[in-house]
Length: 390
Image (cartoon, rainbow, N blue to C red; front, side):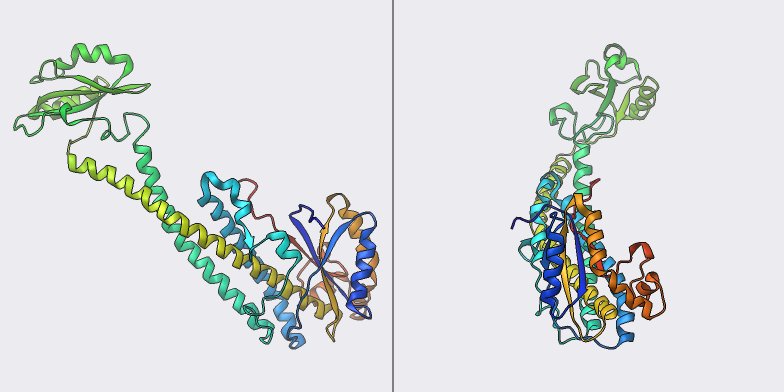
């Protein structure tokens, strides 16, 4: 069967009839007519139940853990998208769970006995997941900060290679022959002149101060707005020249020609580009591996929640069928109505406690308001990990 392309899945459980297979057949037959949903068994192993008090306390904690694990999972996915940059359109194919795409992992879920041994108590399994995700979250902060700093430094240097002559790095525009070097008395300045004032510069630059070398100006480079000129003069009038040039709207850029510095500047960019390339591959691999870890852990938390709520609602011995439903977009309301008809009788458990549906939700530790309460255990799972506004 081809899996419908959906980002929203429903994870429900209903108490077993004589057998869980009967529960499954009843649900499947009810939703088959009208193609309301495609259903998959969601196998949960025989976990250790513990006491009622432990289950109620754990129910609340699992809700918080669910939110935390989902947020870390989405952070890893979002950061992978940022790192991929212009390959961001390949993000979906990089978001895998245990070597499967996300819908396949969810609909063919198998409990990972090696990572989360079922001989452990429910609380211990929850703690294993909490520690695991806490470590991934901490590592993500360190790795993202280091990579972002490298990327930021590179972007700043690259910006200086372009842009206006007033602010950009001039090193790649000038040559040794543009300057008077190693002179005790003379120096060369670089002046930014607005394009509309080229004629005024050429006519008057020798008059800005005394002791300017005649016919020493040269246009080295121009962009849409400005030209970069050289002018040679005696060192002792340099400060005076800068002052009077500014009054005439000519900007002297601070620049000292030093071949070693120029090479070092070019080498810095090359080094940053190389470092970024070196870090890119391992970082993408780490993000892919840990996205898988996070997503798998998240679905295990959902399994824990279904188990705990099912025991709290339906009682012992443990007898329920968990199901992943892929609702048809056009039939969500009708599907709700069908499920309500199938399982409305389960609300009698609330009446036995002399309470209404909302109280029943609170008794089971669900923490939902009445608008979120259904007579069957229900969780919505949105597996679309790509931010819509990204």
